[in-house]
Length: 464
Image 1 (cartoon, rainbow, N blue to C red):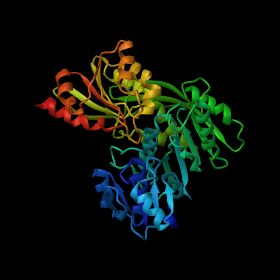
Image 2 (cartoon, rainbow, N blue to C red):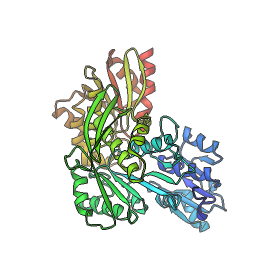
Image 3 (spheres, rainbow, N blue to C red):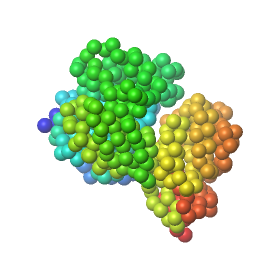
Image 4 (spheres, rainbow, N blue to C red):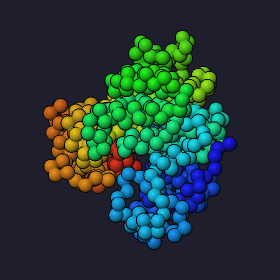
């Protein structure tokens, strides 16, 4: 039986309750019986889903939204100090709790699996959530995206397993004490919070060091950053280390990945035995995510053949190569990729899934700091497409940086031989792309911002 409500969170107020991470925690607390309230900047399906669970959701931020009897105020690192609800919380002496501390409290008393890495966290966490649910283990889970099947990013389960996406961006994943930690890859990202790879490694070492005694680290054997992290933590005497990947010495070895259209057939070698199963999403990187999920489940004592079959039931997460529709022979697919490694992986996956198709990309850079550091690599990744249009930078939580614009990406893309154009007015994109696309083409909307909204609009223009 899962634990109840932490005492400090009986009447929580969430600032930014509609965010992917915040809404998941709010949903679980509401399902456990807490009196949940919060605010968000705009209406959304997430806000409606929270109301359906009994939560009070205000639109806009105002001091009056915060009830005097709130037991705590939950914030993420994106909430600014001058937010009126946060200011009001200080006036009322209401405790302020970071999102990561709230999630850590929800995991107490459960067998936690924390999924970390620069890329692939949402997919791998989702694969585990689906597989464990398919096996009637009724897990709790908190994910950074909505599952295609259940259509939610979080749920309270009655089982004793909690699967959580562990965010390294602000070091918040250091708050968790998992029985199993997964590290998919280690790269430099989130440049506003990390100045060097050494800082990244130190942060991941702290995360791995929080694994409970006798617990397991599942970590990639093929990715350079993960290999270096493995070297650094090998001497932790209470830690079981399980490596996975295509490297000959991997504990769970990927023997073969065979593309099957928008799916893959995967064969692994585990404990000297071959195991073949289907992954219902395209691309080698997604196949590796599935192997990480398999290894983590086995570390909890779940039979590998049962897990493999159950992982095959995973059908995707919204925004992770999600098919939005097909009109006039043109498929429109949405990708959350916003780091060059992710962009390259998704573009290569699409190439493998549809060898003869033209690939057209609408890319929206995410964050000024990321563009400043990785704009050249983003442009080089776009050279994998047949043609691309690049939007202005989506600022999210950041203020502009003088001189940092999408031109950095466009110049690098053109230098790499890419056919790329700048589009500053996002509202013109559906008409532009519909005019470019021909039957048989794939259109990929790509980025972590509101570029996702363009997919349905492009489909509407294609049908007109």
